[in-house]
Length: 137
Image (tube, rainbow, N blue to C red; front, top):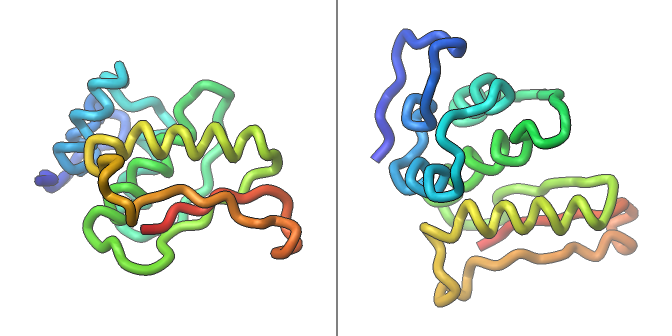
């Protein structure tokens, strides 16, 4: 169950729990060794959970993928129907890295027995796009 965040400055956020993430996601972050949110995560997760648009820029290894993957996984777990998110990437390698992070972050909620949860590599040539990864249930 998520806890409501009220009157907390983004600079004072020291834990994933303070970002209004569900307990299963907080536990998964801790299991992965992510003890406290990085600046990109502090500045993006709450806004995304509120349904606001968010553009972030940060260095490699700063936690950008988790900054958008955690709120996507939370919202997807609350309403798992239809096509929910599309993540566009400039390279195939990055698409696979992001898909792996979604799988790892979401594994506490979705087990392999949930056949409706799967990652699909979209046929980019047909779509006229570069490489894409889409998560659907």
